[in-house]
Image 1: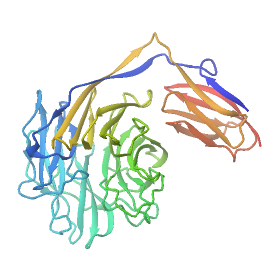
Image 2: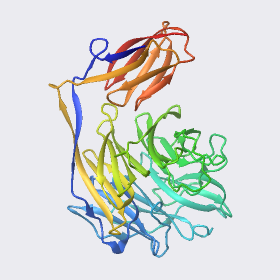
Image 3: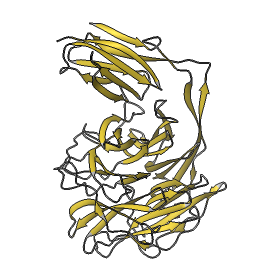
Image 4: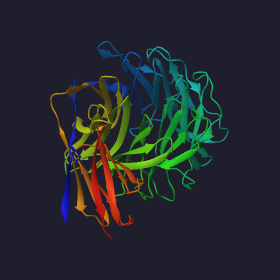
Length: 480
């Protein structure tokens, strides 16, 4: 059978009027603080001035520290938890959210299984320079709480998600409560998990919550009879109620043990971009997925790339977005040790994601944050016992004098049971229409795709291929 090539100029050739590419200029990495402050599970946000604010824990005494970039260095870490020890480890710990100069940090008191150990929040209203005393978040009587995570609504009010158990660590579920007075008090929590006929969640896996305007999305790992895929719960009223849930993973990972790794997500326009680890192939690998927010429906999941063919595993991915700019960071285990990898796009709708290396050794948990022109990464360095920090300036370089041909291919021709679609750049999309104009298929493409066509009636179809705002068309003939 003939191989159909679609060069997108005229009908089959796509010329970009602008060649968009990104340039990343990394600074040298540095120690955020000395090793005496330890380095468990750093998390980073950006304040109104565009300066990074970092929170982390020290497992030896349960201390929680915060440090803010000031002029050309990080401030001396300030302790946030008073005399109460807080839960922290490499894979979990305090969380942080920012709304301009309003910064919230949430944490869980130890011992975690004690009903008198609560969730606490501290707030800063000067960009992280100082914080108020800890305020109790939840009021759950004899229930047990764990793994708090926080975001803010469009007025800067904190919304907190946490894992909730009945006594004895039974009936695991995710709950959400919100404040209407900037963290002074919180409303009664509501249940957010339990979608897809699931009665339990993965009770050892942290979650994340992200909000934009009135949309709040909780991302967590489920446990439906040991199927531990990642899910998203959707709220359209600022976290007051969660009305829909969707599997954002669909790998159907069956495992009767603790992954100790949860998903993360970012909202861009009407889309949820999520990243997570899944071990369904027999190896821990990282993925990212796309879901439609208005319909709370999963679109597609794609493996994050490997730096080489010799990786042993990937884990602990994190994501952030600023406008249309997207970045993901994750740990990669190779024969020589661990390294920190990044996927980045200055405009995920117009340019493909490109891989970069942030660090080459001794890293565990990492986090990433974006501003309008900079990338900020922090990670736990296991050799120095410090938190490492690195930033980069990025910019889009646009040229109207250079034209790039974007190559699409589809095979075979004609088709019978499948259609193989390839694109030179991603993301892209394909739509297929029959002779009456009815849409047979609409699919986002982030990698080469094999599309099943076995159920399509015999006939002629029109395929419309879209990338970077430009569209080309090609005819498909379907045989019985």
